[in-house]
Image (cartoon, rainbow over all chains, first blue to last red; front, top):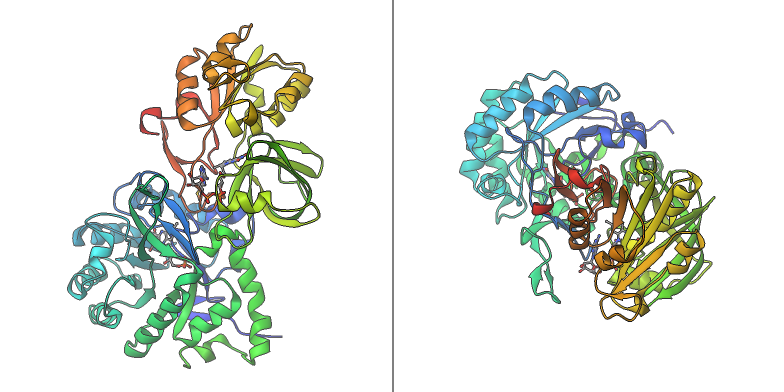
Length: 303
Length: 248
Ligand SMILES: Cc1cc2nc3c(=O)[nH]c(=O)nc-3n(C[C@H](O)[C@H](O)[C@H](O)COP(=O)(O)OP(=O)(O)OC[C@H]3O[C@@H](n4cnc5c(N)ncnc54)[C@H](O)[C@@H]3O)c2cc1C
Ligand SMILES: Cc1cc2nc3c(=O)[nH]c(=O)nc-3n(C[C@H](O)[C@H](O)[C@H](O)COP(=O)(O)O)c2cc1C
Ligand code: FES
């Protein structure tokens, strides 16, 4: 059919727009036994912080209508282990874009962690997670206030020459104001959305289902929220937007791109279907054909 | 790891609220006892994890207790229907670790994976006995199956309606033999008690609420002596001394 699936995000060429989302695809290597990772446009690695973190107590996962809640709490081996072990191991079997997802608890910590990631030649893009709802005094606190989001973005831009994507939280009243603040502070691109803050209660035990009490809601239920936010932000900002939230099919990828996404991340769907990403990539040409699309680049933001 | 469609050959009540489902499909990814499968239940978002209780070629047996929406839906499924499974998950029991005579300790539905383990031990020419704990006689299952394999089997029930009155540790005390290794599957509390009570080495099949079951979401991590480890991919079976029981 000769379809052109390739896209370009902040100067990095991706063979297709499909990227497993941070936290839903481990450090990439886990899935290398199940399929050839090279079919992916990029891989966003699990959220990483300056120091190693054990994460939250269990249960960290709960089911809900249209998706799930998680409160993993950024369990990770620390950025030094990321660049010394995880990324080189992944690079050995994978040639596509590698995106390091970095989180922190202070502006300095974000900048320090990104400076470490900057030294790693195999990392193509840095994704600043200013939107994790599952840790105290950090994460989302930076992504719900335009001034803090801008401060983190600026500090990180000064710490690395790599392109920086800022991943935004949907738990705000004005997503465009935050997006614009990040763009003005030098962000090269934006990723939206992270999870929506949620909670479930076990009515038999009268206790929250998650040990952390609250968690992040993701899955097909958040798709319309993500499409709306991508659309609002893509029209208001001139930097590329990567769409994320509830994507489960090739049709969803195309819808997200029509809303303004240059590339698309697939999150929770990887948990229920370990072969979700290769399936979506394989389905894309046929769906494009049906819709009369020759190149995905042609549909970005057409709505 | 393999994803595939399985046909339900049988789905019958085994004990109160407890069912035995026989599934046929591509079992090539299933390598041994203690491994589990992830069942996609139509209408529910996340898959549900179940241990492989028995296996014969391309057939596997799941024994599940009805506790919520997913298991209730499974209990209502008729033979001839199909289910989407991810198979071959987790690192199971280490049969090679068995010594002269092993002790298999099962609590409630945690007894399920011990049957396939018992078959593997027997095939490897290793001796074993079995201690089981259930709430009451109506919840008990697999007692005859273990006896048929030639093992000594002792049961304890909380109300004394079958075997000894008490906990699984009382069933262990009722056994006549000396053991040098144990395999355990049950509730966290029960596994901790058993691990602390038995003076010899052994392993436990841990349980946590799962997201993916394939090792990519870090939703199921537990504290171990080697740091936080994933029950689904680094386990579910861990050696007793690897687990930091005080923090489980
Ligand atoms: C590796 C592993 C192997 C397992 N093997 C078996 C097995 O062989 N037989 C069997 O009956 N069960 C097994 N379980 C537990 C089983 O997965 C849960 O009972 C099942 O997912 C419940 O689904 P549900 O939709 O019916 O319950 P839900 O409606 O989701 O929840 C109802 C209640 O069940 C409990 N529950 C839900 N999920 C889990 C879970 N993953 N672990 C513990 N409790 C849970 C919670 O207390 C919850 O409140 C295993 C779990 C793991 C992690
Ligand atoms: C289990 C789990 C862990 C996650 N961990 C991270 C993380 O470490 N960093 C991050 O930026 N986003 C994380 N996310 C958010 C996802 O990357 C994604 O933004 C969100 O889940 C919405 O997409 P989805 O509906 O496709 O899952 C996590 C999501 C889940 C479900
Ligand atoms: S359940 Fe996802 S890593 Fe274990």
